[in-house]
Length: 336
Image (cartoon, rainbow, N blue to C red):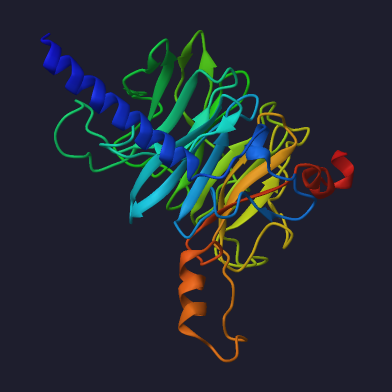
């Protein structure tokens, strides 16, 4: 390489480095696990307002082991999402950036393996890696390498089908729970379970009632030891808003207890989903589409309206968290 060309390259690298430094300097200084946020109590609390929970539609906050790396989703448009990542580097959290495997083809519903080295997620990216998006969403995964993340791998059958699959959730033994709209279900969307046998997934089984219904069962989180399951669904007899979070516990005969609404300490009129346990096991993260009511603002101003739509709690979706002890409170007395 000629000397002149070398100098130009070095100048470009310096400019890029300064630009990245400036971008990082504009971001608040955050240190410690879970972005250094003050832990929640027994009522759902907005997580990292203005940082992770903004005026954008955010969902799927999934932390890696240690709580110093996170991946989540941001809605781009209807049925189109992007995966975003942040991590603590040199004692400080970085700004959100699009995940390297998400920029071109998007992604949603991440789940991080218990060792932090695999990310499962959903995408309609073309199976060949090129061309137009697929008509349906499948479950994919990437693995951590010495240079970053691998190319995405489609899980194929029996996990994926010719219709949508969403929201994978794994137990420590590797059993995968997920949402599917395949034929043969009870309702419009149902929860399935596929067990890992000798390193391969066997045919996915449809979970029976009361987990599934003739309605729509959405995101489902299974506890690592399968001692509870949390479902985002609508049950007209006790629903608080749109989709609520419901919980069920296994009973002696191998079935599940009736779904119980997790109550207004978690649920709201706006709808809740994307629930997942923190890697330390102390907190439950979830997405809530609750919103602040401006009807009592007198006199109503344009600035108030602008603030309403560009800050959290505008109804588009924000990240919340709550102390996991609330789950013990919801357990039926006979199962305690």
